[in-house]
Length: 191
Image 1 (cartoon, rainbow, N blue to C red):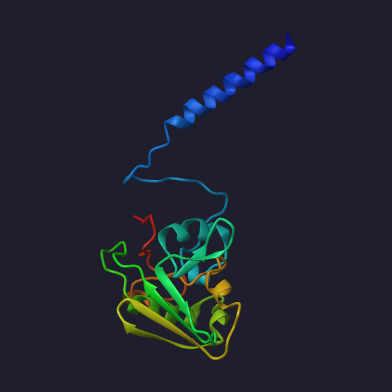
Image 2: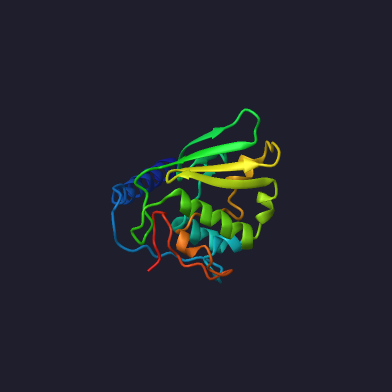
């Protein structure tokens, strides 16, 4: 009798759970999202903060050239392709077309260069760029990173979640530390 009662209880719970989940299967466009977290956020400037509370919000507002997949492998995000030179000293990124910032401005390589300039000036882990000789924007959709010497771990560092080089509109390049306006290309925008 106990076994029948336990089985009935488990089946009932499973059915109730599946009925509840059914309501949330379709994605919804628009609207607001509200969530809580245990820690306060003192800034959404992901370039200058390594706190998880900042990352939880900021990485839904901003995006990067590269990020990580569910297995923690580097993958492209705002770039549609990346070509690494055979000598390991040049990385050429082709940007995804049709990407816009929350203010309606189209993403270009000038925005990527400005973001790298800002990170190099105030980024918490700007040492990531110590081996970078420079970057170029040969056209509006191409961003080229030139290395001083080959660095096999550079793509790992570039795609890191710890203090990422988030891409912002070029007009935000001179925003001061922890004063970055929240204009990104991510799936959510801050109102």
